[in-house]
Length: 277
Image 1 (spheres, rainbow, N blue to C red):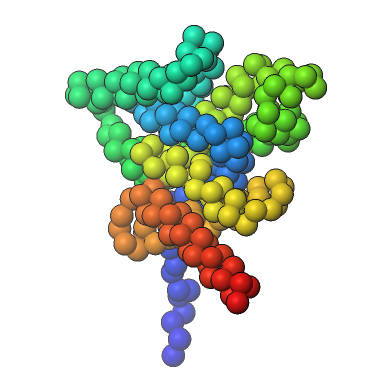
Image 2 (cartoon, one colour):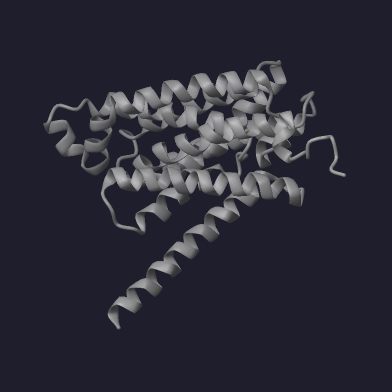
């Protein structure tokens, strides 16, 4: 006789439903921002700001307000700082990232080591599917909607600026203002992602799905859609597998992203060799 009770799956759990809700927005936002960072050859900015966001998280935990909001505020300020310093370090722009990284990590480590935190920051460093609550989901939804609408509205300007800033200026794009706005969009993307992915490997979700999509050598729009597809695939596989393996979802998602990229590269090389013969 079959059981009268329905079979339970991991998707019946509220915490997993919350995690999937947040993951859906992460999987769309990260490659949308990441593709512009990659085209600008600024993918390391994503890594720098993701590490800097930990300072915002620890400050929020210290003073008792929402960590996602804290991460957004500090990351946004760090992004503005990067843009502001570009004029002062024109020949050594990589130094800007070192300065911002040192500031963010320094603040975070100082606060964590002080012993004043009432909550553990590890969930934000490594990612956790258990810590997503209703307030976080609301903030994620609001920041995601603002980011997506901004990307749609600024699509052509961002595209011109990503390929050639000088040409963008000639055609009338206000590049400097656009860079500040883009920094805020990066900050929002990082803020909504740290709960699930974690600070330490967040840059992999920003850059690796884009890197995978670029292997197909298609146009911009198709590459963007492929990036979102691979991002959804990576984060869903990583999230579900992490639950069963009892490991941090951020780290495992990063591994899935790397393996997906390697498999695509290998498959395309095999296809090319077959065509050659």
